[in-house]
Image (cartoon, rainbow, N blue to C red):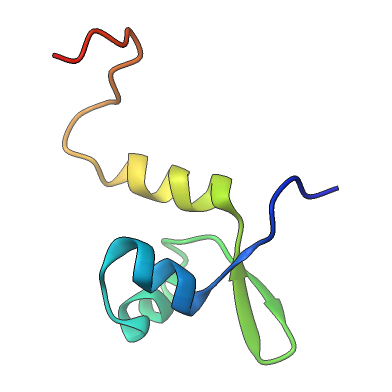
Length: 67
């Protein structure tokens, strides 16, 4: 069962402050994992987090020391 509702292309674009066409291009290129429901794409929160982490310039700070 899903713990949170899936995000629409519009939701992802708003969160990342990019155009919806950019999000669709990432989905088309298979850079961003998404599921198609009819004509619409949905992205799970964990898949969006994985996408952002994969494109970061360094790994996340897992120690929590803020440096």
